[in-house]
Image (cartoon, rainbow, N blue to C red):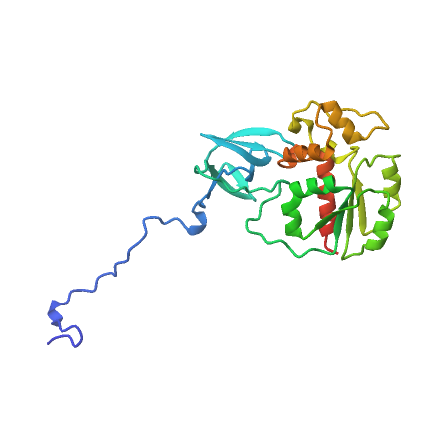
Length: 286
């Protein structure tokens, strides 16, 4: 008699055997398996932290077996490239030497993280005012990418004497903050007294100690030892051109200075901090 389903005779069937299963040779539970550490190309401008020392900086050079980082104060440190040797936004990563070829910048001229393909934001009601055209051009060159992403417009006053009237016309408020950058803002100066007259909580007046924004560019970036001292009573820019042997054309001299500014590293900290402070103030949420 055959089995009604298999068709085999009962005598052909042996005792039922155990069912065979296939097992993975790795019996380690998933939560005990080591996590994969991603490999990241050490592109110039990438900001990472070396956890052993706590040193945090941007990649400026990557050579065979080592990477050089620069922190916000311009200090350089060289570290070996080793598996899991760095932190990127809190994650452990392995830095590897980048492939050759053109590299897209990962940082803006101001040192901020670049946003490739970012479209300019619709302009805010808030504004940043600077004293003159040269100030505006310098801010645009270094912070232009950041300002467009944030939707902040920079305008210039053509002098600080009318600042109180300008602030009154602007009528700053919670949704329309006003930031002002003033040259030569030192205690006792004319600029200091004018700035003290602005009392709106929605307006912030800050400044740098230099007679003119030219001085906020590091002399080393221009190939000079120092900015010359110009006797009182003389036009400062004209005096600088004459002392340095530049053509007696301040407009042309400024364009030459501006051309040598490539990033925030070419500017003095006294200007950098004030511009960053104004951007933060204008873009703060009410």
